[in-house]
Length: 115
Image (cartoon, rainbow, N blue to C red; front, side, top):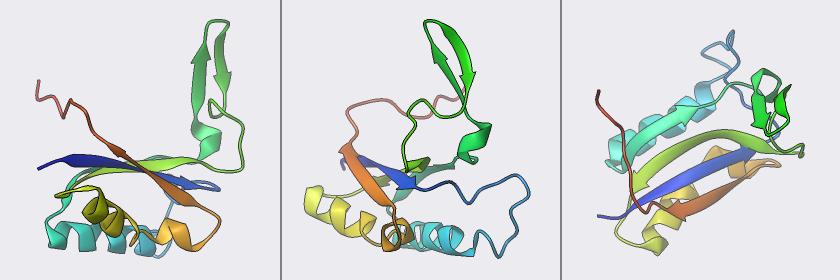
């Protein structure tokens, strides 16, 4: 079955190193629902933008690669039978209820590497 990457764009990540269960209730609840549906294959929550480091030809700098109102706060991979199903599943993400949004992309290849 095809896999789709869902990139979460928000003002910043809720997953600060000292985030409480209450802080993470909404995103964790959504992840639990995706697990229960059987569609979630992998999920990665990123720390806030001020913890990012960017690398360019001229060197390393603090902060995200692109200075924008929204940053990639996380990414997860779902399985869906087609684009319509992938978009339906992704549209349940709470990130779209505020100033954020999602980018859904068909995964071409790759996967988690067990070393």
